[in-house]
Image 1 (spheres, helix red, strand yellow):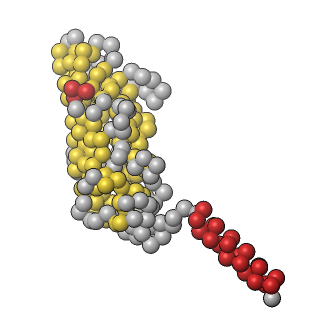
Image 2 (cartoon, one colour; image 1 turned 90 degrees about the vertical axis):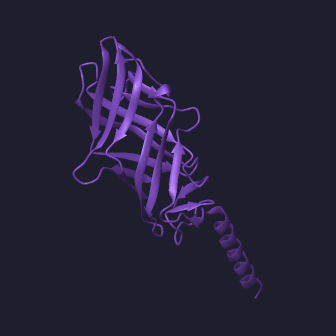
Image 3 (cartoon, one colour; image 1 turned 45 degrees about the horizontal axis):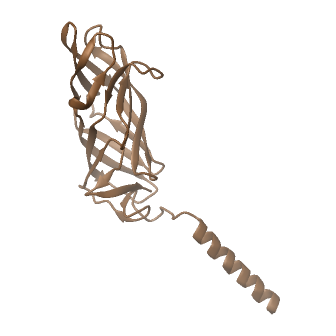
Length: 217
């Protein structure tokens, strides 16, 4: 009897240890929550916002490995939650705003004196966020993701238009961030001073819902 009791006690202790050590399961919670992983579900219709992560910049470089292009220190996105199912699953959002403060933007492209403006066109976009943190941004049917960059040059003002079929990013609960790395855009119009391809990299954090950090489950 004592041996069986000790074994039962050991089994209970092991189970409790595993319960404490294991991360909280997302099963049963919504894909997007506030208050922590597995916390309160973000309501459909809520607006999520995020600035650039502190100390980082958004860049649009002419190559995936280069450093020539446009750099902005201030940018923000805004998205409305359109669906937030039980995890594991995929939440949906409507990206209604993606702005860049042109006064914070600079360019090191030869012949370019400054950045007059950066506009994200064809909004709203559709975004999906999977439980594994994969974020996909797509334009509406028949449209495309498009960014218009206006530059001041030695030859006057020029306009560069870049397009991409979609963007893929990654959400991280460690700092409630969304990161995009070397997302390729192709120039569709503009002068020879506009680089042929643009590679977009940025980290937005924290993503918040009414000021509360958002987690992906």
